[in-house]
Image 1 (cartoon, helix red, strand yellow):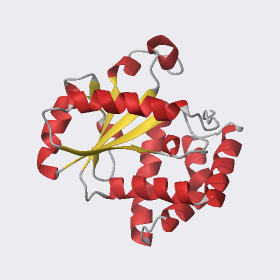
Image 2 (cartoon, helix red, strand yellow; image 1 turned 90 degrees about the horizontal axis):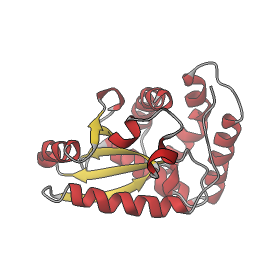
Image 3 (cartoon, helix red, strand yellow; image 1 turned 180 degrees about the vertical axis):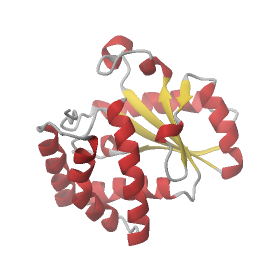
Image 4 (cartoon, helix red, strand yellow; image 1 turned 90 degrees about the vertical axis):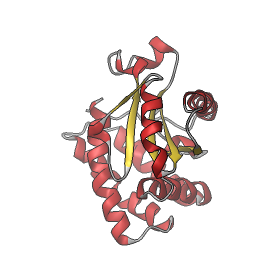
Length: 200
């Protein structure tokens, strides 16, 4: 199997803005603290899978309402990709089509949407990675190179791709201020999440 990694595309910023507007409307009845563009597509100059990752941050007492609101507005909760302390969603329009055809058939880029609390490790992880890569050109280029090289190869197992990023990702997380214990927890969760995402 191969993983699709593309050079940075400025259209990812526009795609996030469009999705953010739609999410704000869908969550109008919920007190949302912020909607964050996270993941590699949020970092200018970063090579990435063409999937927009988004964290919807709400206070713990509003998470149930936020989950219900997304389910009423075209999103399906995916328990198998839930990790750490977040709730993971896929966009229904993309669920209906075979892998690799969603963007062409719907005209919309794929997205992963996560609901999480302001004190969650999941959010801390995503923001730490984003800021570390935005602020450190050498680290960003190193991580991009690793992912582009991995994308050239067929991987016997999904774990091979995840493991291939492990060393540089730990460096990114450390640069972002996470403790060793937090990095260990994030790494375990990433393995589970990547396995599911690459199969979807």
